[in-house]
Length: 407
Image 1: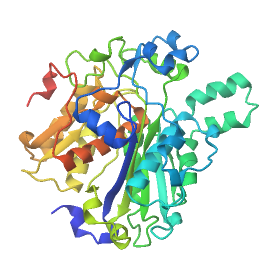
Image 2: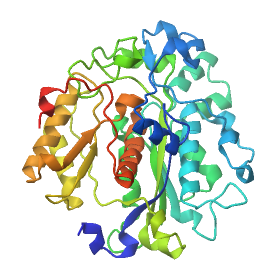
Image 3: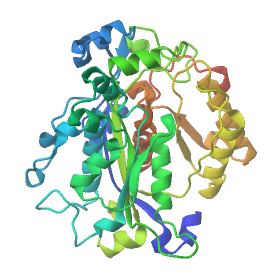
Image 4: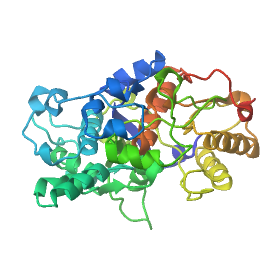
């Protein structure tokens, strides 16, 4: 029995919808199929749309994992197509909208006749959102500087929080929400914070029945590539996509920057049942989460905090010996980071008396690159689909596992 089965239905949090745009797919189903098929979305910058961006080939970056080009109107069902002031949205906001829309539509929470929440199914003031982002608005700041900040649309594109608020507004998400800026942890933290909005504090009323949570980052621009490239030893310098982003491999050589967005619709089990959602439409139950702040330095994870946060999540979920556990690891293919994260998982499993043979572990960043603020969200979705399908996503380009991964 997991802990949440001891809770009343209005305190249990379930996943009723999901959506994503990733380097390997325009939708979550397309992305998941590509992941299972062992495909990757890492490309030479010279062969992508990015090559035409002024100054990008002078940044020194040779490869990246860009998101596919999608027109917002093409992604909407005909009955949902409406005029949106998307010219005021920066790229992260556009990607975020696509993930939010797909997730809400998947959860059957949108009005069938217009682009809004279905008022018969959910109170819009109890339907909120959190989206995480690492670079949201950073590139647009360069444009504001170039134009002297004289244009309102430049300002609107720059404001970082609009990566979350802009796509939420046309969907009618009027509950608690905002942008989460915790660097690479942003998408995962958004999931945790969304769940907490549906948990009662001090015995009073909760703040939401539905929370759409995730992350978005469309950060591939000359400014961001130059800035991130300054972190020597962190970004993969290779120009061969087939050899880049190889988590846990001895020959890994740094991360590859990727673009993506992902969203999960979280809902109390009581609310999902009350609106008549069939049980088989529920993807999963969120039974454990944890968040701590600790690092060895600005770019390297700390060991003690990592061990403790993994233990807390597993204990909250009441994982016991004999249960199959799948980790979609954060492993980013960096020289220092991967061994530390591997050791942290091994130590947490040992501390809790779990058996290594019950643990499956891969990183889908071999396919997507490191999608920054979106990583925690799309990888949560991939982990849920792995459980649903009873399959483990392949660890691409893993030919010689690092010593720390033994066992």
